[in-house]
Image 1 (cartoon, rainbow, N blue to C red):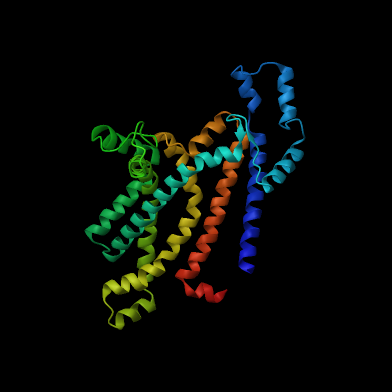
Image 2: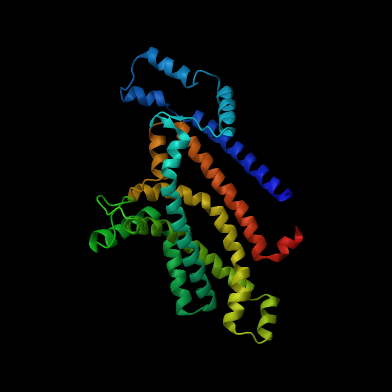
Length: 322
């Protein structure tokens, strides 16, 4: 109970910090919604602009606006989206499932592929397998995700015609549950790989280094001295303990995955939070921008809380110390 209360307190403090910091940064950024309206000649009447400023609270001092926004967030009211003419929370929740699907697929690819490749490289250190995996890890780590996405689109979509170029669904597809699911998976393959391969490279390097370090510890030598097979020693003793840095890295990188999805969603026309964030920044729709940033902070905070719980399962010493 004490740990839960501490975690909730940290989440609340993090969200408040994100609100204040981003509110200040947005206030310092040039341009407002009304500048966009004027430039697009949607509204040019000065009296109407003043009326809109008063309606949306822009005529209040900055600290009053911040206090009102914090109070509204505490009531799960993230403001109103001028662009979509709808509450911010409704707009975000409409786009959120697509981004969560992309993030889950990319993280799954990264963790499974990265940890497996890293384990193989460590088990076959200084062999051709280790060299190939290390080369691939360096390549995918250095390659920008948007460039990788474009190259895979040219190869698998344009040249071979195996996968669709972009979007999330095909027009006119059969609306049965199975057909629709398979269609979404076909559209998901390229963006998930583009986003996941970068993180897979990171996990592969970390897993390899961690396994080589754990393999030199005394308890591993004791397991080998007992006569256990090499496979059992690696799986039951080395891999489990080597996963701790990977789990830590996973918790820290969930926020960057959300940020990376902005670029990938733009390349593949994926209708998620990234596309919404880009459009909101360009149109100065700052309530939506703030709402997405708060959502990102919540994702990172909850991910770190989950990592803390996973740690106690992987390493009993942490549970005992607490």
